Amino acid sequence: MIPFEILTHLKALVPSAEVGLDETQPEPMLLVPRAHLTNVAKALRDDEALAFDCLMCLSGVDRGAELQVVTHLYSMKHGHHVALRCVISKDDALAPSVSSVWPAAEWHEREAFDLLGIRFSAHPDLRRILCPDDWEGHPLRKDYVAQTEYHGIPLTSSPTGESAS
Image (cartoon, rainbow, N blue to C red; front, side, top):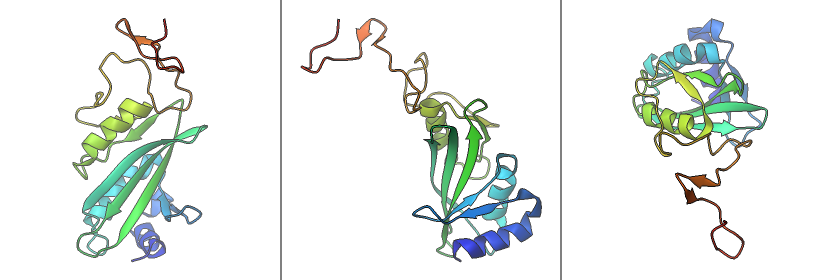
């Protein structure tokens, strides 16, 4: 199936979800409202005609004014793929976890939490995965201000490569 066919089929399965299609990106993406992400994910996985059984990637994206959760899925049975985009506010960076649908999402969601501060409701173990537990801020946010030291260790360097003092 191509993305438009997937969208049409999905709208019949979850008519209240108000899923849209964005074909302006290099890869067409289904636009999924935050409130319907879990139901849409279950429909994509469980419907025999769709059978999206493989979560290839889940990423957080900082678009400046908003955050996004972008999920790439693949159907091993049918050989088709689709990308989902869920837009969330920076002020309320909360998205539903899809780790109950695709367990592989658990690690991807932890990374998006750690680096962008996106919290995933109903995630079984949402904690930092790359940065230390006491790291301040989320390094991939566009408004992130880098720490100058961590536990007394300088983290910035001068243009000549020497540590800043």
